[in-house]
Length: 285
Image (tube, rainbow, N blue to C red; front, side, top):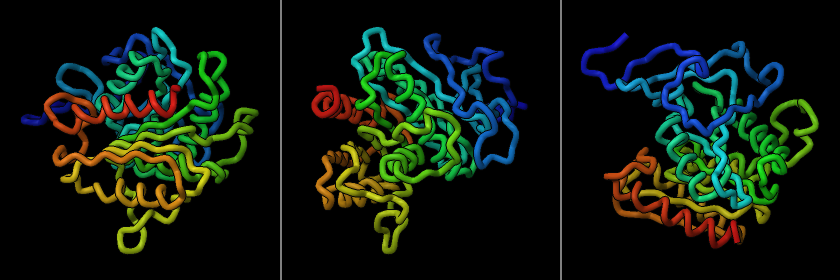
């Protein structure tokens, strides 16, 4: 039902039966062949929110996690899993998922957009992230990927999820499903764009579940100083520095939060170039 004065129309839609603006290059991989671990709700198509042009903007409910694959015209041998934000209550799947995947694929990265469980299923989301990394690693040969060059890129709550995946890869969060679960879920690098919820420790220190060690993979962080979640990037950088982990942090004066890479916002127009340069210097080469 359309609400007068509202920008979005919320509808129940079966994804795959209707085209709402997905990239023609994307294919889907279901994470869990049987029951979804820790999930009480039966598998179903996501509940989506679309704009007035009929394009999917957000996923409001996800019970059957998926990877959507964007294969580049000229693969560079690296893969990046994208974790959209949305406060763990929804997924900003277009702005912080599909648009990012299309950009990365043009740069040569095989991009995977993760539909992780929402709303309010943080533990399930980590299971999904770990399983997704293992699936991508298992399919490295098929996608012409170096299994040692698989990273994660997250925005806001997706940045939180990326940080959790980057620091909790030794935790077995779900029962083994198949041979893919014998592979490592450790990302080889992480890119966190305006991450949230990393400073929930005492006196706004690092969130206790984040286990930063000398073995944590290299990390790139970007945030605007006027972002209410800016401290998350600062405390994570401090922890990484203390453990001598390769880290690069950029703080720009303005931009606030939740801008993706859309033009018109100074932060959104800045981070992609910086991240691209960092990836070329430390990951591809």
